[in-house]
Image 1 (spheres, rainbow, N blue to C red):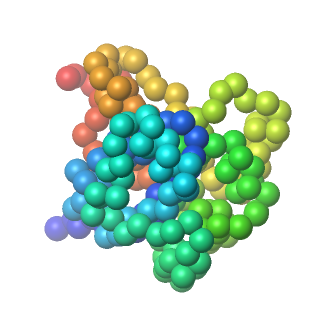
Image 2: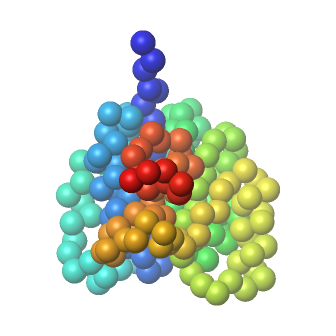
Length: 192
């Protein structure tokens, strides 16, 4: 009998535009609960504002996950000993990317990212800004060289998404593939 190891995941919701990506990610985690042990969530104040502004609700705190304050350095994933194996920053602003790339651990999000990288675990940054300047590109290079994965919030269209959520899911499902989840999603070249 093949059993799936349940994952311990950190989700940091950054303050850039793109709250729909965070919402779809949390919704997908509800669908994948049999593969999950724990989801720890940290949101910036700008993330909460953008969620309310872009999605017209404040439902982010209705999810059955463990939410932590931005400066709660007692959160379990502030230490490598807690063994969270994956961190997803969705969306990730260029400012947050820059702090992660330079090792500035001035809040729980950047500390958790630093921990994930130092422990050689999986860090996935869903960068949302566009266009990129050379500082952004160099910061992405630095994070990549440190073992992180840059996954731009660039949706695909070949699955013919009909709603904003379906469009956002084309990015989120790629993120979940990168995080090694087993999920049903549109796959190029497969019959649907």
